[in-house]
Image 1 (tube, helix red, strand yellow):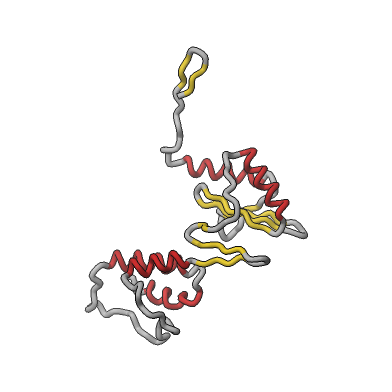
Image 2 (tube, rainbow, N blue to C red; image 1 turned 120 degrees about the vertical axis):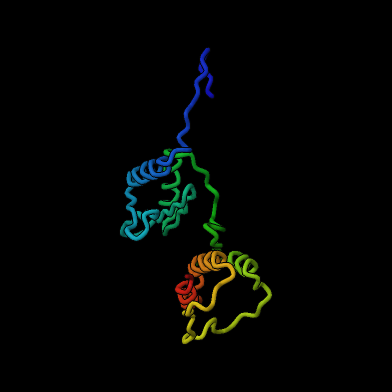
Length: 185
């Protein structure tokens, strides 16, 4: 409630409405297009601002924004622009974004999911197991003839979903996860 002189005003908040995320994202998209950010064709939650000598990439997930680029002055300019149009908080250098850990070196950035992978192993009951140099024989056949039933198919699907997300930083398991995901049903 807001107090204005002798009157009390009650505000109707739109957060519970189904359309509010779409409206907010539309407003955000229009705002960043004002400083020449273009929406990425392959991922609509990524915006790119490119000049001849540098670039800035803005990735948004719900209410988290990740800014990366080749020119720190352009990144700072983008932060100030966003601060003028939205309530924002600068969290400093990225350490963790969408369950992906970020390590900064002098001229490099490394992405990894160590904690996510350990949590996944723990959930699957495989935390103490020894790793294999080759995760799966390329010729193994997992197509069941119907005589084998999983005890908990929903748990299997959840684990496969998590493994698919893990392939963002672990390309070495992509083949295996692809084979396992084909046998989810």
